[in-house]
Image (cartoon, rainbow, N blue to C red; front, side, top):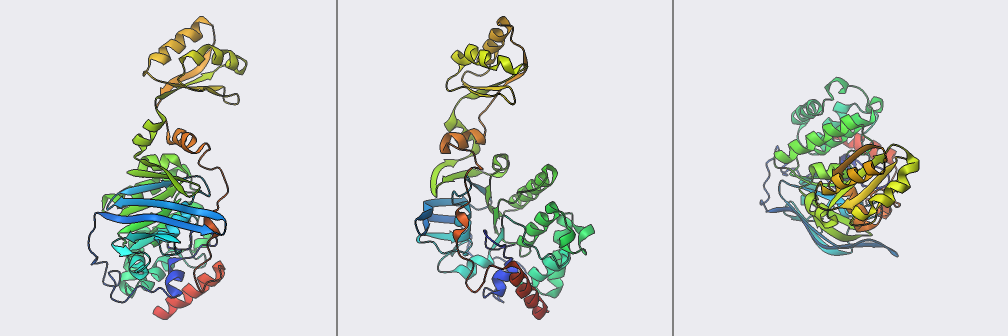
Length: 385
């Protein structure tokens, strides 16, 4: 469900109820017929910039997302990810730069952009006093799908997200994972060709996260274009065709997961020692095999050596450790991960820092109180009936 992507959650119903209706002749109102011109890039942005006083949230960020692909937008908290999504979804005006989404200009044609996108933000923005079915039905009616089609679409999505058994329960009784699934279902009510997902699996258990990945992959397989922000680097590795890394509001790297990993270079030889007291001795013994600084973690008894040459350093390490009569619990070679990329590119982990993205004011005419948004949305839905 679309909403202000930082601060109090705002539902797509509140977005439209506060002056942004889906036009009666929109593709959503006509049953989803997409009439805009098909373009090779579903999302394009050039030179986006945004400041809040002395704080630079975005600084000359450009991106392109080919239709039917996933762009992973990665960066630590405060990097500018949410600010970028707020601009692309018309919830925030950039100080500089231009952007087009689904063929519509974000600044000059915000209404067309809103017709053609779905947004699921960092927090599940569902009305806890309505049932799952009522939440989705309300959104469908606000998109002018009509009473019958709204109900049909709600049932379809509840089945797709395995929420049928809880369809008639108030969402305040839902688990966190169920709320996240319902939130994503709400973003799909009007079958948008472009989907913005701001940390869609935050707080989910591993099983629910895998389920969400499967849903996203199915959507992309059907032609949906996705811009995804996440701090779960494995998630970007699994889902993204292309990755844009930003830090302090600036683009610092772009490429596929494999391309970014190659920037870090080489492999990693990981060794778990049996005895933590032998960690320092093993490090001194193995450092000549490393192509860069060796790291160690006494809590996990882990040594990590950047290496090159495939399994050769692994064999050499085993011989050296055996000759020195040092015992290991585990040893192996792995390729660099996106975690390694983050550390190499930014100097800190993906979850470091305080989120400065959300400094933007709420939508015009809204005071930021979630209860007020929900009340306004419910009243609008009742009137539409």
